[in-house]
Length: 91
Image 1 (cartoon, rainbow, N blue to C red):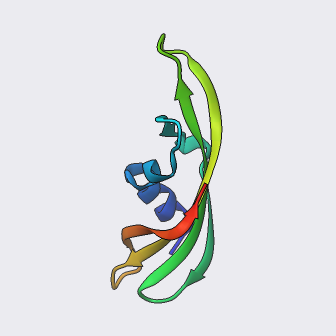
Image 2: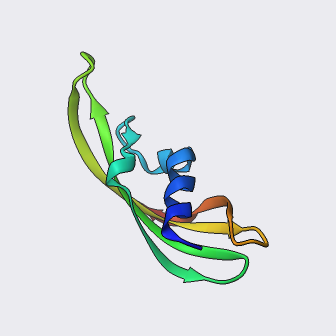
């Protein structure tokens, strides 16, 4: 599994929203993924990104650093087919 496939999966997935704490959204440009473990069926990844916070006027009000660890499921070809947040691993 390569870094590009992980980036594409997490950029298109709504799973990162679980880590957002201020009702903002993940900034894909700030996303960093570290592969911690991998076997034929799954991988463990640490994901970090900035949550973008907006004001009512539509201007960016700030950013909050977010991170979590996800257990990623792989198909027989090593492609990402799903991910679950590891319990207790969010900030």
